[in-house]
Image (cartoon, rainbow, N blue to C red; front, side, top):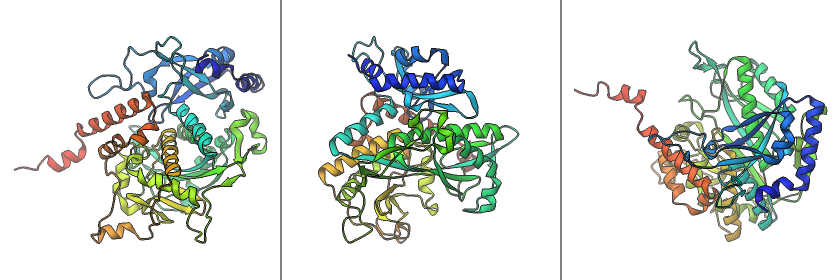
Amino acid sequence: MTALESYVKDAARTDGVKKVRALINSLGIEYIYYQFVSVTGRIVGKGAPADHWERLATKGFQLVYGSTANLFISRKGRYLGYGPEAHELVGIADPETFVQLPWEPRVARVFCTLFRNREEQVDPGGYLSSDCRGNLKRAHAAFEKKHGLRLRLGTEPEMMWLKKGADGKPDGGVTKPYCYHIDQFEELRPITLKVTEYCRKMGIDMIQGDHEDAPGQLELNWTFDDVERTSDRLTTYRQICAQVAREFNVIACFMTKPFMKVSANGCHHNFSLWKGGKDQINTFGGQSKFGMSDVYTYVTGGQNKFDPEGKDPRMPGPIGQWSAGGIVKHLPALTAIGASTVNSYRRLLDQGYWAPVYNNWGYQNRTCALRVSAPGRFEYRAVDSMVNPYLLNSALLAVMDEGISKKLDPGPLEQRNIYELELAGKKVVKLPTNLGMALDAIEADPLVRSSMPGEMWDVFIDYKRDEWDKFLATVTGWDHDTYMDYLP
């Protein structure tokens, strides 16, 4: 039996398919988006009338392999990742992710796991290794089997709400760049409340938010959870923001650094490793009727293995220290995933705005790429709002696995302001300062590369090398401003 056949025939999944049919009927669903996530975090897939739910849940839909690379063309005119001769993938719905779209009650969405075509000569019906979401699920299961631990994660997705100019392009922020200013937060209240309404109906437990220190910049947070569900919720949150932007005729901007001399859009990942715990459904005051129970489920309880065990309340226990050792060892390569675009490095270079540009860890020290943000919790800071969370979290699992297995020492917690040390002429170890350097670092790191198995690595490095080459080959406004009258 192939992996595809085994997946489709799983008893729990078969029961889930029946439960989805009951939801389709009770909610009046007419159309379903079958979606997965590309190498850059873009949401792609197909749509189909709900009448065909059972057939597609069993047979799946087909789409070209190149859709995992956005079906984009390289600088030299070829398709990235896969050529036109490649087979078509098979997308199989994950019933537990089925939920109605609150802005269009006739439509629902469901995430899918991807498989190789049934007629492939090599590994027919096997898991498609360029499925970043499927890779995270399998990596997390392998990590739990080896260490008896699961990764719980919360994210801080900053983004900017921008006005549209007459040409439809960005024309500054909806609000002024005043950090934590309630009046600016109030000006964005209609947007915030609409985002929160949609989030709750789609199982995202919103807990707090604030106005950050860039034009129109909001950070809205939700409850941390098992890493797969948090990654799906970050993806869903982006879809919700895009819809709300359409409704208010503004731009929901996740670009890392659209403006210099103000803060960028980071997406800090706060995480810990846990033993045990149980799932608990949040009914959201009855709103859980709009989707499958897993959409509204959060894990609670258990033992946090990052909690301090010694006399120093700042220092994590052994598993936390070893995990930090793995992360610090591989920070340069991890930067290629957490800061994955050319624009990402505008954030890292503009360090007056607390950019994490140094290869170290500390306690409550925002000059470090990894900090202990509270007892029992790490914050990975070299990550921005353009991140593909499935790729980054798969990589974090890989390096923490090495750290725990080899009991790697991360060194002492850094207490100093590294910005000031560098300005004073002290020697410091920095992260890569542009995408090209970061790609060199990840190509030289077999372990981090291994977190993108098989064709996933091929697609990633092909796509990102081409992105860097396109940038280097582009004449920009800076070129004109600097060199147009350079001579005589």
